[in-house]
Length: 406
Ligand SMILES: Cc1cc2nc3c(=O)[nH]c(=O)nc-3n(C[C@H](O)[C@H](O)[C@H](O)COP(=O)(O)OP(=O)(O)OC[C@H]3O[C@@H](n4cnc5c(N)ncnc54)[C@H](O)[C@@H]3O)c2cc1C
Image (cartoon, rainbow, N blue to C red; front, side, top):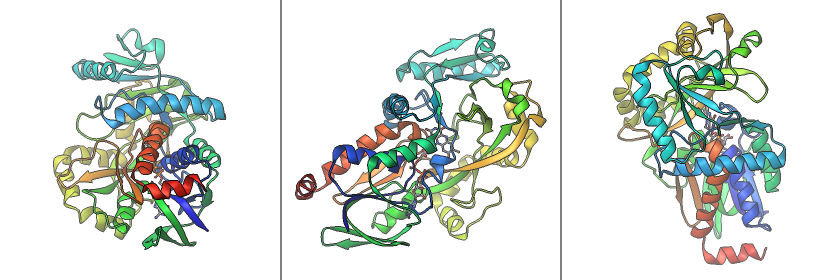
């Protein structure tokens, strides 16, 4: 069977792309290849489950625009398709008075990004939203929500009506007369076009396609704790600190999940493997790839202080608890139970800076999503719309004609 378009990766971005492709090309033969045995196996199924507002991002960036647009698309889609979700709002806290200028700057960024309904709160107003939280000030963000991203990914794939092949790892690409042959662990597939949404493996698929992108995916693990059931009442919705000014993370936070549990985390530590989730997980290939790249060392050099702090906290429950106690003083160390981990695909440049926006490269016969970090799950429907439009633009006119008549 020859396919019109193949999508590599059944995370939320790949699933949203397949769904948008079906909308754009109702008669196309679509294929989704996933190397794991189920969808959303990596980042999409191991994230914080938050629908982000878009407050944090540089105004005018793709992240800012697509997060805001995708957030509303996501609420509408989830409502229509019965995906468990809730628009519950969140607090971003400045625990200490010296953090107030940064809180004010974030509030102004939120206004510049057009985030609806955000409000600065005085210390007295904080407990009206979160009775156990304390701080010198806070921002209330009413449009933030929570969702089940696994259920979302699953539904998008169903609606795409694509042929879905699990346990099919793409390990080689070769040219065909009219597109590509994708070599997988389940056999070969011929396609006229493909879109790679491979998350933690994005740079490797690009290399298979002869591209040498100016960035490398470096894995950063995020560990979570869970609040024991008797302590869940201490957190009503979502409580975040101010994001770190230079380190590319939001800081450990408290998140009520859609199943009613409350999670604390994630931290952000350099990981020795892209897809092994234990705290001591190690892969030679991934480690050599990360440490053989100059950008990783430059990143370490710039951020050694934050990196060391994160490492200490990864192995010390007490330090983790202390970070959370700045937000909710009544939390005790015993309230925290070790829970799961996720791994972020951090795209680093050769200069050792992280690539701070969505990034994809479109060609005549393939498109590579090379950087889809948070809030890509929130933005997935809007991001997929842009990706599909770009891919179809790049595709040759003759192929488009063949598809519309298929
Ligand atoms: C700890 C953590 C917390 C986060 N919290 C949030 C949040 O609350 N809200 C939010 O909006 N975003 C959040 N994010 C970010 C968000 O989860 C990701 O941006 C998003 O899931 C990326 O989706 P993806 O489909 O690109 O990648 P992935 O979900 O990683 O999917 C890529 C897929 O490609 C497959 N694949 C890779 N290589 C191959 C191959 N060779 N052949 C076949 N298949 C292949 C993989 O198996 C995988 O299933 C978080 C991320 C992490 C890690």
